[in-house]
Amino acid sequence: MIELRGLTKIYRVAQKKAGLRASVASLFSREYVDVEAVVDLSFTIPPGECVGFLGPNGAGKTTTLKMLSGLLSPSHGSVQVLGFDPSARKREFLKQITLVMGQKQQLLWDLPPIETLELNRAVYELARAEFDAALAELDRMLGLKGLLEKPTRQLSLGERMKCELAAALIHRPRVLFLDEPTIGLDVNIKAQVRRFIAEYNLRTGATVLLTSHDMDDVNALCRRVIVIDKGRVRYDGDLKKLVEETSPDKLISVRTERAPTEGERAQLDRVLNLPVSFDGPESLSVKSPSDRLTKAVAALLETLPVVDLRVEDPPLEETMQKVFGQE
Image 1: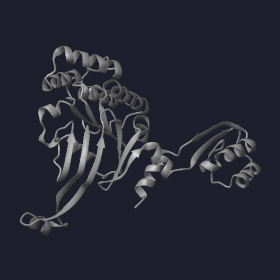
Image 2: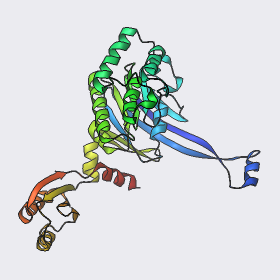
Image 3: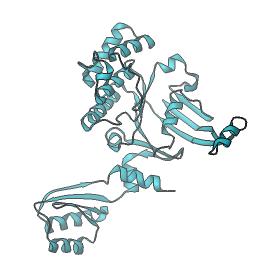
Image 4: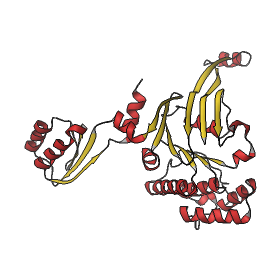
């Protein structure tokens, strides 16, 4: 479905020193430097897979998505999406993909979203019956009732994002490129958007490539992740395996009936011999290697008046920080 071989994008950027003299000189003679945004990317995504595309700011994620969708042409290498060269921008290709960017919008600001949807119906040459069926399905999954007829400027950010997704998916694309689709949304709307993407992927078999700095998005939607940094692939594989390899310790979170006494704290230090973080008067957390997990849990239960105890993997943000920090 998606295949990259040695994909590279290099920008030629003009350099200018500060000051009026340098500004005038740059009108006649400019110095340029090559900036590598993406370097030798190679990976394949089969049909129907939902893949997380991760990396720090400036890693090359958005540049890659723009090349995959045909907005940019690569400097070197090759890319195939649905058997097409995206940079050729053939109608047959463009009618089967969509690119959703959380920081951009296609809705017409002073008109209701239904007008944008009708415009897209004409652009994608959808029959009325096909359009109505797709809109009814999107309404059921997103809850669009009462939103499509209101001017876009009167909608909240979460309501606009729902309508943006509807406008982007009204032609039922086979490939979804999602760039920060939940940025700026509150917790409830984020959860709704995640459920929608998961259901759309399951119902239609669409292939999804998702970039997000919200690791909850990735945890909820993606089993496989591709991690890039400075334009290069750092990891491509199972998300759970990445967490196990990078952050093998488990995180034990404990809530107690009351604040631990000084004697209980001292006993924990002796028995556990592990770093204990007191997150509040009645809550604490312990990082434990997997082979010492059973003993650590037993010691906590024996020493403290435990009300609640949870064992989890460390936050995915912590894993990503370790990945990006490795040379």
